[in-house]
Image (cartoon, rainbow, N blue to C red; front, side, top):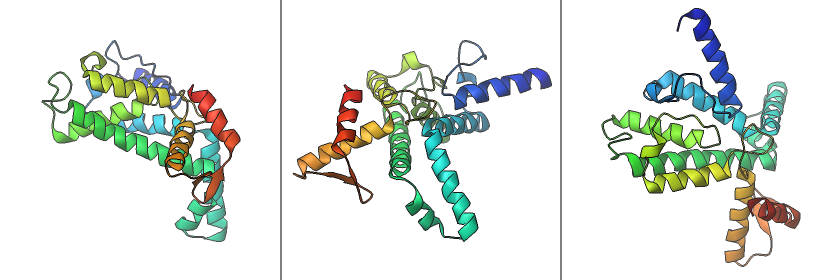
Length: 214
């Protein structure tokens, strides 16, 4: 694209990815032409995840690291200093990204229209990107219309969940899903309260989660 146009395209897509906007100016194929480009994929994925975690999470993380520099504490103690909200967001984000990658690879690795002829590494990259972009980002490195019915349904579920509170992404949020899952597990186990990371979740929080989900 040349220097000036290349820089402009880079800035545009960096902002679009961080804001989970999904807008691209590369043509009608989104990022499909770059489906095997490791730098483009990892950069876009990284920006989507950073924007989708939420500003409160990053503020909490930076605060913990600043204290670590001053006090020279260990990494495990940094994790203990993080708020319950941050721990839930980070945990759910990892779970959704990893599970989505595994699910899409399982469902699509033999799909001749999506990734059948790709190498194992390219299949994993496409699956990981699909799992990441479903955090309401909207970019694509595979043709969405060629996905299996199962993958389209899973995609809808992941888009419904979206990102995390106070982030640039949409959806019901990762924390809402976490609260509902934890409450369901507690109910099945016959417990009155819902606990995670040694802390209890209030009934008011549960009610808000149910309302948001509904």
